[in-house]
Length: 281
Image 1 (tube, one colour):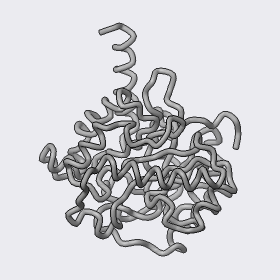
Image 2 (cartoon, rainbow, N blue to C red):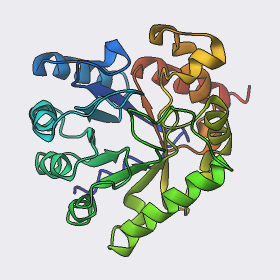
Image 3 (spheres, rainbow, N blue to C red):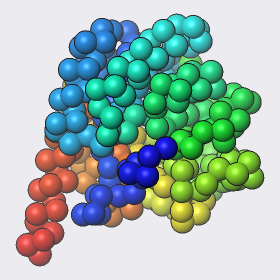
């Protein structure tokens, strides 16, 4: 892993790195994030990078609420050619692969991916070996249940305590296997087995869920269904303003990476906020 790659450290202005979402799927919840052609994907990726993306996150399986899993073979056929081409064309951009499968992770890393974004937090028993045998970043997300059933009345005694405990268990597994804590990111899993109140509590808590100082924090809130209940925005296309409202708080919650569909809007938001801070407004 080249030394220049510690992109997960927040930018010098204190704002999080921006991760642009590229879904090579026909059914991800936000239609504008879907692509099914490599040339189209490369064009979208190039535009994201030009507009300020530090990372690209490639997903070959929809994990929206109610989604059904695809086969390993199908996910590989969707993801690997894209990772290969992205690494060839954008050698200095961080590439993340959103997968729960160790085989997909292994093949992606072999093609030059830098991060595995595992929403299941090591549900595949072989994932730990794949991670410890590479020098990649690994993001562990909290999810209660599975995408097909996770939003069926999720309950917690204390969502902050339970999410932190579960993430701590998973982080410890990696560290015990020799994975450097600086390579580990955690994600509270907004919208993954949580009610609106759970989501808001987790966002308010910020780094409270992070097991240790050297572990980084990622938020993925972009256009999610929480904005339907919070703002009455039923359509994903109408949720950008709410998304940016949450993103504006990310610096103050010490978030390291923010995963988004709308890269230029987030880059503009952070730039404007940074300028105003410099002016002591």
